[in-house]
Image 1 (cartoon, helix red, strand yellow):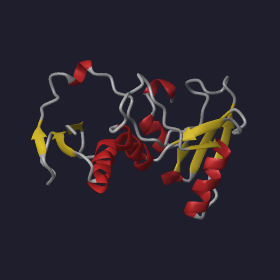
Image 2: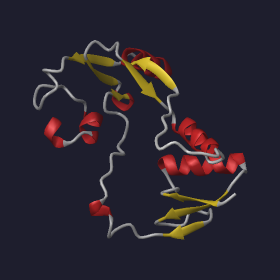
Image 3: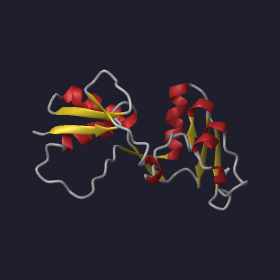
Length: 160
């Protein structure tokens, strides 16, 4: 068993993986972080590389905006989507560490539901009805959508 190194293990998915490693107690690990967090860390300065490293990690409130009780749905809302909670992704990642052979690609599919079903779940959790709007592909162009503030913060300005 080797020592696992988690880059960005102080928040988000990285922190969730650290929590899963703690719970599993099967591997030793080190966290690479810009600041100490109370767990074994190594200070790392990502600044020189940051401009050259593209990232796609953003808040997940693009279509469903729970903070503002709103949602937009492309199409009719009945297309299946895959939703995976961070804890499920972390557990799967930890379980894969012990596999004798690794495939080049792996997928984690925890839950397949439609966007309409996801909105209904959010409404049930919050106990309020969401302002739900449907958009055809033709209407999802700059200036032709009705994005809420939380959604606008997440998406590039070109889409607003």
